Image (tube, rainbow, N blue to C red; front, side, top):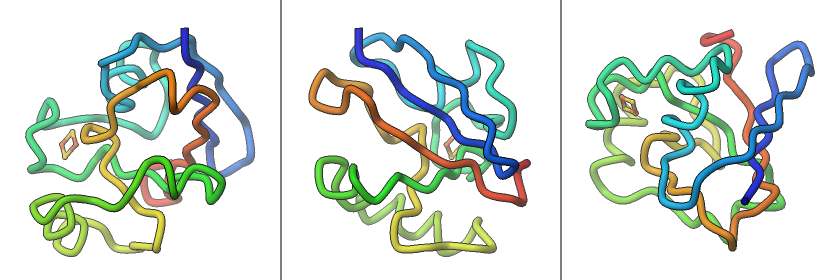
Length: 107
Ligand code: FES
């Protein structure tokens, strides 16, 4: 089972055994990870699932698609190079050990 670690702005970490194919957002919501709300249920219309992907995983995760990119521009106040909507990140064995940080505005 791939693991995903969520890092809060205070530095606290929460590591979850995730299911391949689930989104990083759904994994967080199901396990009560603070700071990831997933208000729209993964339809790319709320941006309450915004995370910063750890630099180590930026390559394997890849860039956002066009719609996600537009939503990040519109819905996120502190967008960074590694910003992603976690509802668009699928858990996979290739991403085992993935680390994402919750933005301060969602803390
Ligand atoms: Fe709404 Fe990701 S859950 S944009």
